[in-house]
Figure: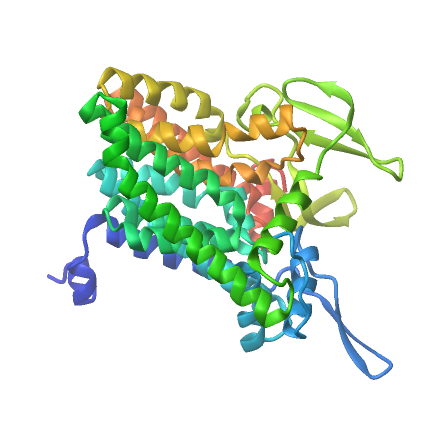
Length: 446
């Protein structure tokens, strides 16, 4: 009798559980993204003999796609952000043209690969198939992670290089780690918080063995120096090549100084407060903007409203539906973040640092999420809900580990996973007629 496993290619049979899961996740996510890559699409107009591509942009594609078009003309623009993600999108546009495929293929490819690295990281840390599977499922079915990773933004490439660096770090391949950290920073500078999280994790792991600060620092300093110095060298070298190639700045330090000064000026001035969750800013044109403060990202009580990144509304009589609806919306498991953070700290302290999984979870969440409280509340810097995305792998991992110990806990995790899949189905950004009809039959948002 022909067994299903006999239908698999030979190389797949040789893969471990985590590797098979990584391949499956990559194929599924990339397939879903390719299915919808042309939605929305722009209008192509010919004006005075010149072909123009107008519209069809989602959220911050309105900033980055025009910037990439200028890069392709040899103009240096958008200096407040590092160049690598934009250059990767530019390479895709050179091959596939100035169209949705050209804009979105590289972010879609790399963000799908980024999520495929999650099971490798989780299994390397836990050696638990259960925790690895549910960590991967929660991230793969995260709506905002999917949406931001699908469109032409900086985040998809940044996630890929960050997670690849993390996997190398867990394999103690520190030179490779540093190189990929440098590439991650060249994609998006806020990745520095996650780098700090891994460095904190490594220091605490060393301290748990020595129990003496100076001895721990002495053992940790070579790792720190190699990771930070090589990573910064890659980052500065990348800026140098860009600045010379596009004649942007005389040296990378001037470019870096501009980045820091630009972002330091992005401050909000609220007129109304709903602390600690949000506040209201009155814009120069009289309109208002809501600043969703970091606590609202993880709070089940009065959570932040779904941000309509790009929504198409269709009506027919009393029927109203949205065939294209890219939302910046949380997933319910985000609400467990505070619990996971406290639990991971408790378990790490209880084990005196021997519980490396919870030590990793605590360090990653603490350094990638908590700094935004400082930025938002003390420095009054603008923060956005999608800044929380790099924190999510640790939340999903910590939750999966916390709820694997007994039958009742596992049932709770099954329920969260089922809710996550339903949530993903409801908020999937591009819906077919069949998809819409199913949502209507179930009386769900559409």
